[in-house]
Image (cartoon, rainbow, N blue to C red; front, top):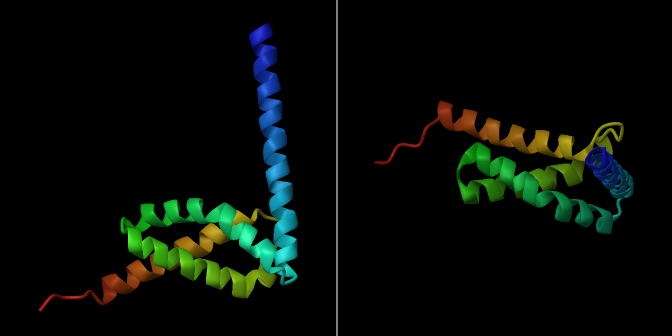
Amino acid sequence: MLICCALKSVQEKEAKKWDDVRFGERTITLKAQRSCIQSFKKLVERLEKPLFEILYTQTRDFHLAQDFMRETFVKVHVKVENYNSMYPFCNWLFTIGIGLAISNHKKQSVNPRFAI
């Protein structure tokens, strides 16, 4: 019984922590939509590592993943006013990044580079 209560307490703390993270992300995102550069920098700092990991998994190329990560943040910065705050910002960001990686892969498949 004591273990169950302790586990429930830990789960409640984790849920609250994630609610705080989501609330913080939403607040920062709303400020970024209003052209707050500091807020956008905070989003980049929070999400650059997870975005890079996703893109590296997709590309298996360190430098290409870095390029896609930078390009993703540029696109997001330009289009941040289009973001719908009803959904998690990270989902929107990751979708854009993965879309860039897939688009590049399709271009490479259609027009492969041959070594001469």
